[in-house]
Length: 416
Image 1 (cartoon, rainbow, N blue to C red):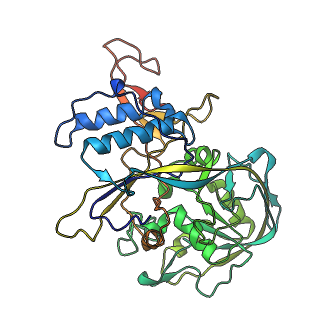
Image 2: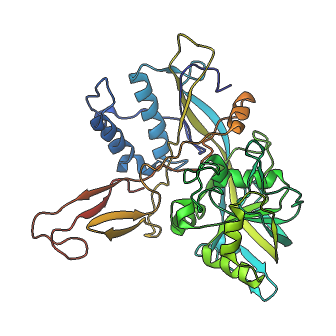
Image 3: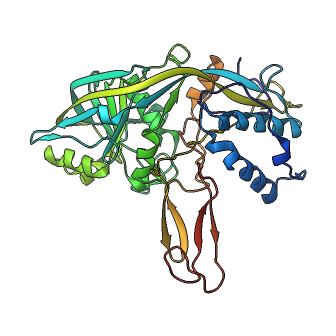
């Protein structure tokens, strides 16, 4: 199936493992939807999808099958046609990989010592290769700035560099972000070149053995806890047979503290190099260090459901506008760990994590190439839907969460 040749396409997709889709009990989803988009209708959808009945919409769970069924139900209600022949769904073969941090080891050998960042609190690593065991020994570390190769913008952090067998270390976001230069890429607005998905893909095309992204809260737009919690769970990919683009044997993140120690041991000024990486003409810098990694993971194969619908066009029926969205989320966590971090500022509750509504509009020609080859399209941003938080002010005199009176309370509408 080709996903491009439709005049209007709504594609709600997730790289997830799925069971057959059961019918949804419509008695729990009754709402008088109006003909126009409204806050009330939007809220009704969110309340259903974020409800306990949907169990956090985890891949391979009953929440997934309920979500797919609900989406199909709503697309039919809107009058959209099936987007995959006579079907609203598309089967997608998937591989699930979950890194075992307890059984894995990461070492960064510098001129002064061997750094062993704790997997989870200080570093995360994973693989898209589908291999349950990955071993890398004495791979030379090279700082490649933002890890961008954008010929249409006259920018190539890999120019004149052979990284085959090496581990590239790079910054998150785009060269214009930290310097606030609107003439560089998108300035404060992240382009696809700033996304971690692109950076790993480019490193793989360059032949690197591994890639590490240096996390910073501002550049990523979320704190380290988001990286730790996301990468500590299952990761989903198309099998290499379905998506034959180059893949890294290992890829991951290191936190700011680990990065600064790594640079300092090589006698390098991290802040100076970050500033240099934001200027045209930057050249990669060897870090005088090597990486050794033993990565153990569990893997399993399965299939997923994309949900596809089309609004046929009239004036240009041979062209398409494609809308993409994730329908999956993180499921339920009964361990009591990994809950979103909430903090109070100026009498309001804020989540230390991805900002609600933070959806940067990005696109990249590689997705067009995927569609032309019949490869299922994915969201290049790697963004999971944000959870909602509802602020409610208790009655006068009632104690807030911190024991103070008349303070707003934080509630998690999506407890996945």
